[in-house]
Image (cartoon, rainbow, N blue to C red):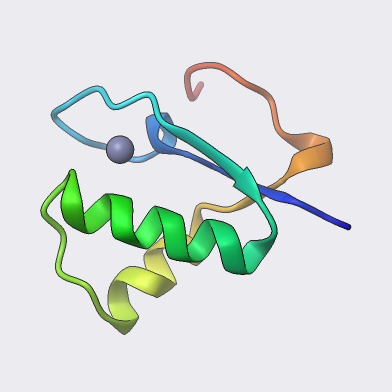
Length: 68
Ligand SMILES: [Zn+2]
């Protein structure tokens, strides 16, 4: 099962959020979208889903740490 990673540190934000979500693409999309809404105050919707999808990284090539 291929898993993907959504690392909130990759997202520009004021809160220096460090949450990292790892799971299947569907799991991560749902969890990351809910997190973006509940914690970061984004509006739920297709635009947010697209933004979240764009930040997913394959688990195999994921490098933990701050974005360069
Ligand atoms: Zn966050």
